[in-house]
Length: 257
Image 1 (cartoon, rainbow, N blue to C red):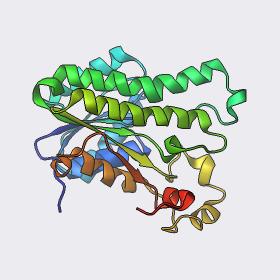
Image 2 (cartoon, rainbow, N blue to C red):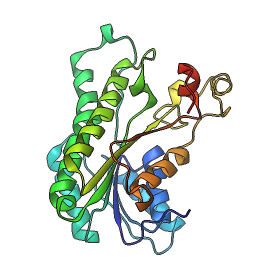
Image 3 (cartoon, rainbow, N blue to C red):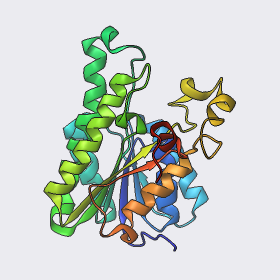
């Protein structure tokens, strides 16, 4: 099955690198008009140029915005609709993790920064897209959660708590926005990105040996899953969390399937 987004517009937050850029690439390849957003205009310009070079004729734009600021989300959504004429797919990918360590050592500042970007950002961007376009025309929202949101791990417990919240927000928004808007999430395992480099760089072989598929994920593994959830192939799927982790979670829990 070929997954296509011809005639549709996709907005990807955190779209200048890593998983976000891989998702944008897949969606441009599938025929979508793509708007990239992140905080830094220079990084966005580079990413947009990369996509335009990879897919001649693709319509690609960018608009800087802070993921935790509702007014900037609204401005980015408005710019997307003004430029491309629609907003059919929203990918809430932007995330941050300023703290590594036990919950008992977490300070309020870094705790709130993580919540504002990872959790509140989902609500702010979805609300902006819904009000500006999707309430009247329909659409699909894909949120980026994590397998860490499904259980405890050392060091990144607070980040994982916000990713658990993303799972609940996905289900709640799916309930509230149906039937016009579908809302789903992808929960990646450990993926080889700069964002997660500290978790895998010095011991990739050891970690991979414990993954049933015997390798870590790469951004395109997640991008393909996001494309499926955004496409009409998933037209009767909403409120779902798709785990993409090479089988790691099923092995850890003893579950199959």
